[in-house]
Length: 135
Image 1 (cartoon, rainbow, N blue to C red):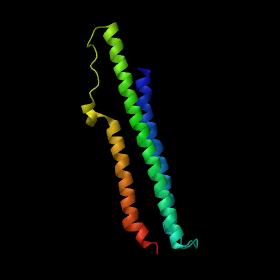
Image 2 (cartoon, rainbow, N blue to C red):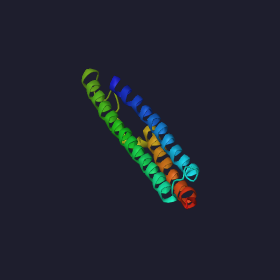
Image 3 (cartoon, rainbow, N blue to C red):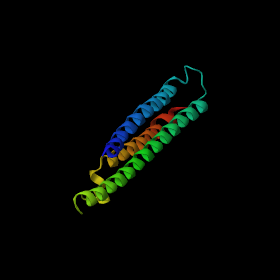
Image 4 (cartoon, one colour):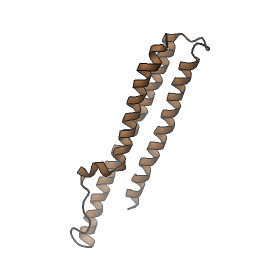
């Protein structure tokens, strides 16, 4: 039970880390967009910097998604082990095994969707509003 609890807590930690890093990286990209002329940075260098920061934010997002998915798989494994133990100690069928089709009930699903949507929005805004104005 402690392992299941730890896996649940880790998912929130991973999301908080993603939010902090993504906010910092996108903030740096926006600062570069706003200040590149004042800092006398060439537009092509500024564009490359913005793209580099967005790539780094995407890598952070992918790593966070990986950690959340691995955590969910670990949770499934721990839960199945718990069911095995209760089958032996209490009676068979005492605890129902997790059903993966209940994916829409898992908060990890929505964390992964949030991260995916935020990365897509980040790239859409950059490609339509920020990068075209860096000339």
